[in-house]
Length: 236
Image 1: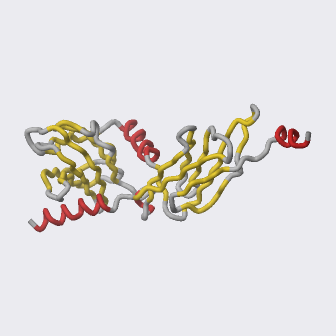
Image 2 (image 1 turned 120 degrees about the vertical axis):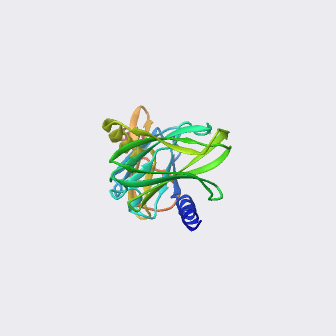
Image 3 (image 1 turned 90 degrees about the vertical axis):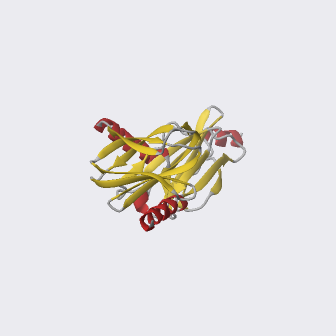
């Protein structure tokens, strides 16, 4: 009973300590932005936003190892989600070792576990659930944890986690790339840079770039640099 409670507590901690979001919104001063380029120099990623969606939500983390080189265990989002009784999910593993997967309900009650030795790569699992509801699937290996929330809207025959096998290595590389880019990580104090673009009088014009340490949600009104054409129009 103590071991089940400890694992349930760990599962809930994984859920409630998930990173918070930081949202950046960009607009142009008296002009429509065509696109905005965002660079996180600290984390090493960049993203281009296209009008009309010039808002970027980033995953705020208090610990660099969640997204940096220290990350060794990571779930994809299960597919489908929501699902009826059965869903599939992949787990990325960068260090071999014994791993324990557990599915728990929102109260922390563990419904099924599966322990096995996992090699480096992406491993596929199938989760079966006997009742509708919201659940958390967690994995623990070598002191690392990963959790994902899933929604079941159709009852099945049992609660079970089944191992489906190792995914091909080329899919593992693609999966790692997807994990790095699906959410944009930021740690408070990261150095970010922003640049906007718009077409003014038929000429692509850039805004004055903004470079600063970022750690909170913020709205930016970007100011454009006048083109030579605009300057000559003013002088007429």
